[in-house]
Structures are given as structure tokens and as C-alpha cells.
Amino acid sequence: MKIALMDSGIGLLAAADAVRRLVPDAGLVLSSDPDGMPWGPRTPEDLTERALAVARAAAVHRPDALIVACNTATVHALPALRAELEPRIPVIGTVPAVKPAAAGGGPVAIWATPATTGSPYQRALIRDFAAGAEVTEVPCPGLADAVQHADEEAIERTVTAAAALTPRGVRAVVLGCTHYELVAGRILAAVRATGLPDPVLFGSAGAVAAQTLRRLGGRPASASVAREAAAGGSAAGGGRLTVLLSGREAELPRAALAYAEGRTLAGLVRANIPE
Picture 1 (cartoon, rainbow, N blue to C red):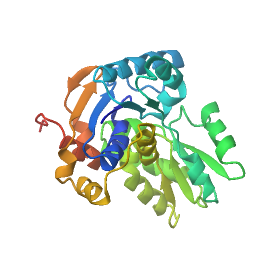
Picture 2: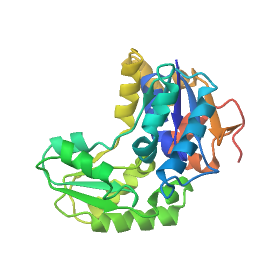
Picture 3: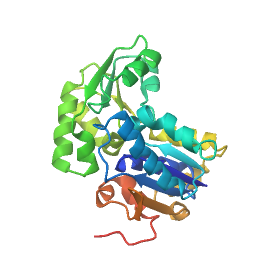
């Protein structure tokens, strides 16, 4: 099995790692767009063209499915991507985990990029899946860029600022940008530091990986194989990792190695990682 993932940058690492844990011997194609990022400020038409180019680069490698590991691209480009690639290549979008977060009851906060916060798309998710729940939209300017560049000072500053905007009574925090899942531990610590005792974080990587497997009619690996993959054992090396940067085959970006997901995936690359 070969799964492709696309995003503007390294936000796709979390979903890629989730796929690897479910199917340790799957081949992975990571297709991103460093030449065109960030996608958020672009017009929907421009973003769709960038997303199509990234998807076409991945499609050359004949994946069995394509995960759009980007909330913004899912909002604006998913119909165009499906129109071009399906049914040959199933396309799976990424939706913030508003529904499961709201299902547990209690107030919910949604951390998202400024472009997504307050957007008709996010407001529709709240209306359709969080009816009756108290939802606070928390803009996180600069956080995705900080994560993309593994800028520790900027991550600390932006996470702390967003935590300060998160109401004290919140029970759940939805990570509405795939980049945020790479610093989930930092986010949890920052929110707890404001006085919230034990908020639950809801990301989308695991659900997207599971949905992709369902679309392909597959089953996850056995518990023992999954544990070995999670520990970086031999099962993790069964599939090959191909990295595409704006269509060019390359190595994992250096910033990816700042995160556990990137370091684990680096073991699949058949090339030397630069020091």
C-alpha cells in the first residue's frame, strides 16, 4: 500500500506518522509546497492551483490514496482535487475534530489560523456539529509559521498568547491546523499553566489515517506490530518514504527533524539526512 499526503508544509507529518502506525509497511509520499507557502493568505483560486500542482506531483508516484493534510486546502481545494483524481485515487480531506470535542459536553475552544477563525467554513462546523455547546474560536497568528520553521521562541510566544485567549472553563481544545499537532504537548502545558486542570486536545491525524484505511478496505496492523512501529523498531522500516518539495524529490526538510514525528519518519528515507 502506498499513501500520499499533501500540505503547504510540514503539517502533514502528524497524519503521516498516524498512517505509519496503522500500516507500518505502507509506502509514504509527502508532497508539500515550500515555494508557495503559506497558503492561508492566498485567494481560493490561487490556493487551489497550488494544491492541484502539489497533488499532481504526488500522483506521479501512483499512490493508492491521497490525504489532504491541510484544513485550508480541504476547505478551498477538495472539490477540485476530487474532480481531477477520483476515482483513480481516493482523496481524503481533513476536518477539525469539532464533532468529537463537542460530543463530550462542556465548553470547547478551537485553535486555528486567523484565516480559518471566524470563517464560514468553521462557523458551519460549529453549527452542524457543536449545537448547544459553548464554543470559543481562538486565533493563533504566527503559530503555524513558527512550527513550520521549528522556531522555538516563536512557538513559545504564540502558544502562550493563544492559551491566554482560551477561556478558563474550557474542557476541550480542538487543534484546527495540522501544524499544531506537532506541538500538542507544548499547547497542553501552556493551557494548563493558565489554570485549566486537565483539558483534552482533539487533533485530526488519527481520524484521517483511519478513514483513509477504511476507504481502501484495509485493516490496521496487529497490536504487536503497531507497538514495534511506534517504538521505531524494524516494522517501521517496511515502507519507503518519498519527499517532494514543490514537485522536486528531496530529503525531509531540516525543520521536520525537530519533531518526534519527523525523526521517526526519517528512518524510512533511503538517503542521508543532512547534519
